[in-house]
Amino acid sequence: MADRVRIGIVGCGVVASAYYLPYLMRDTRAEIAALCDNRVARAEECKRLFGGGAVYDDYYDMLARAEIDAVFILTAPGTHVPFTLAAIDAGKHVLLQKPMATSMDDARKIAEAVKASDLKVVVEPSSNSPLDPDIAEIRALVRAGVLGKTLWFTSGITGPTAYDKSLTVNPYGQAAFYAKDSGGFLFDMPYAPQGIVGYLGACKSVLAVANIAHREHPIVAEDAYDDFLRSATDPDDANYWDVVLDLPRDVVVPNEAYDNVYSIYEMADGSVGALHIGRVLHPVLPGSGSGALQAFGTDGNLICGAGHQASIITNRRDLLPSVDDDGWYHQPVRGDLSKAKWPQPVPGGFNYYHASSKHLIDCIVDDLDPIPDVDWGLHITEMMAGAAISSETGRKYEMTTTLDY
Ligand SMILES: NC(=O)c1ccc[n+]([C@@H]2O[C@H](COP(=O)([O-])OP(=O)(O)OC[C@H]3O[C@@H](n4cnc5c(N)ncnc54)[C@H](O)[C@@H]3O)[C@@H](O)[C@H]2O)c1
Image (cartoon, rainbow, N blue to C red; front, side, top):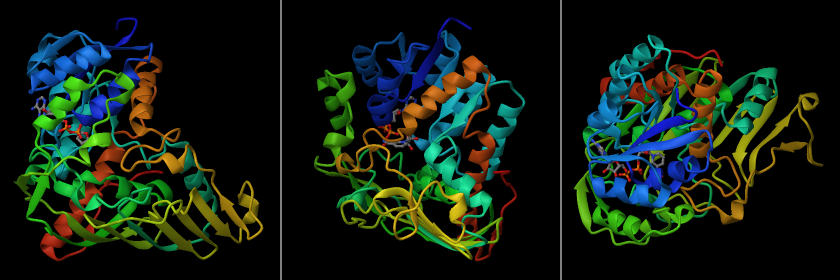
């Protein structure tokens, strides 16, 4: 390998320009060696803004010709499986954006290919995974018994601040996020099942009802992102989310995939809980956080959000670092919640895109094991695929994968 990890980017869209490329241009162990997008002007504009080597309009051409050690797969969901398998076949380390796959057959193909190689593969998102030290801290407390026996939990879509446009996320991306092979909103939101696993550990079964609530979806014309990128001059201020929410949504695309899913998950620890994923209006009171997950046990209660990363009250105070006058432990907020603009990372908080990029480079340079890895991705994929199967068969779906976590 060269002195620096040579990275090829495929998909010069919103996450690339807002998060990954601004990180990579500053990590001295990385080199943006190649940029690819089938709308090649995007790759050219990203090269202008963030630097970088050769530009390609075809991924397989980049894999064959570019001198790269790793690829970041940041394209539309339907491309992830073939692009990952081709990268592994070509001997490249991978950062794979969500969803890993939308079926277990495909997810298993990826896991098997990775395990047969000596390559490092980070499966996004790393938020709500043990790569986030706040999640790891709470998971360790739960394992130590801070909730006693966990009995039940509730969870829903996430969104950290008052926000009144969530009905129509994602507001761009052609049909890529709504076509059947995208997996739709169910597979767009691995954050939610991941949050349950992140705190409570592996899942055992799922019983779900899934349907399509919105048959059509208004989005912003695809060219608007090209215009945005062309006019961008500051690599630290190339975040399309800052403008796209206010642009007219005058292109209507069909939605062919589940966008309203209610699941009951049974976890390996015996707890049972509900998760709703849907395009609902989801504003919350300022400072109250997302309230994304609440878990109750025989000895304790865990609440995420409510102005803190997480809060716990328990009979096992000996396990907690500190408690307030009412007996609650409040995990300190990282970053400035008052400046949070959903769905972007909280400024100063855990930025999963940056953390995963750094982590993949650490894994390659120092021969570490990736977090989240393909086994994690396989399990989270099964929680989502299992929900769809359960809904279609009318039966509880028993998980075939587990995690020692
Ligand atoms: N935007 C976000 O905030 C966000 C957040 C988390 C995860 N993600 C994930 O990141 C990935 C990209 O999302 P995005 O929001 O940047 O989407 P996007 O549509 O802005 O970007 C995707 C890019 O990939 C390009 N592309 C599509 N098919 C291609 C192909 N076959 N060959 C080469 N290029 C191709 C498109 O032209 C586009 O520029 C998705 O997997 C999404 O789930 C996005």
